[in-house]
Image 1 (cartoon, rainbow over the protein chains, first blue to last red):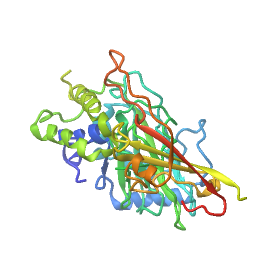
Image 2: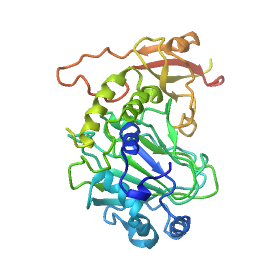
Image 3: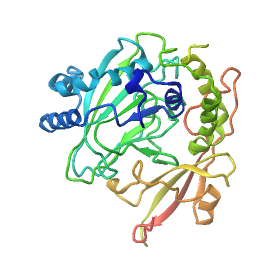
Image 4: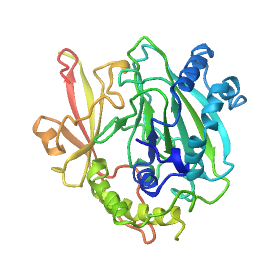
Length: 258
Length: 98
């Protein structure tokens, strides 16, 4: 996706609408290639696969000045601000890995319990992919639109495959910004190389309304895009009407008009 | 006499009609070890277009989803996929073909 965030730093209405519909937006042009490569080098020398330590909730962040530089970029901060507002809390961060030859997929899950104000009050999960990640290397798998469903952490582990599931494959330097309720999981890695993905969870300090560039929020193009979700999110089936109403209510709130 | 094992196929349909389109699916195969089970994200197309299609291939339906009720005030709540059908078939250990 080409990024208008590079100019005004705040997301425009059409990109924010994509976040509202799909539960995530992904950019491939926010981070300079050299910086991505430095993060990759830092990941390669970082002690691998030792698991998340809750007593060290930002260990890779503290060890890599390059990754801190990524999240200090004005374009990146602009997207974060559009979603969770100014001065969000860096709840925790972690260098996620899929070792070479790991042939078991992670189970589908969400990274949250049910928030009382779902989907209006949400943390954002920012996933940075420092190197090229093809399908065979264990990219993150997501189900677009699933963030609007009311489920908790591991409720969705029984599921295996959905029509419309999407692997976040692509070049190095990509960043995906996800709603905390988006269903996702890591994929098998059949290559001989480690797959890295650095993820920060940001919590808002303000109500999440009117934070993006809301000009054009009610344009016909926005509503046409919303209506097209019925065709794109086949897995929703006949529950599309309930989800459309939920999304429209949320969109008016996000846009600061209700 | 060959030993047999249960296979469980879960099909999620777009509508309650058992001929409705499959939108999600999972297979749990009692005849295969844990490291040979269906993986998340392993398939982009369902094994059967509908529950009826699977029945034509010999699968037995062992659970139908209840039709919904809508308590006032929660008509627009959505959670897990509602139209979940559970099917089974028994296979002999020397002729697993799924």
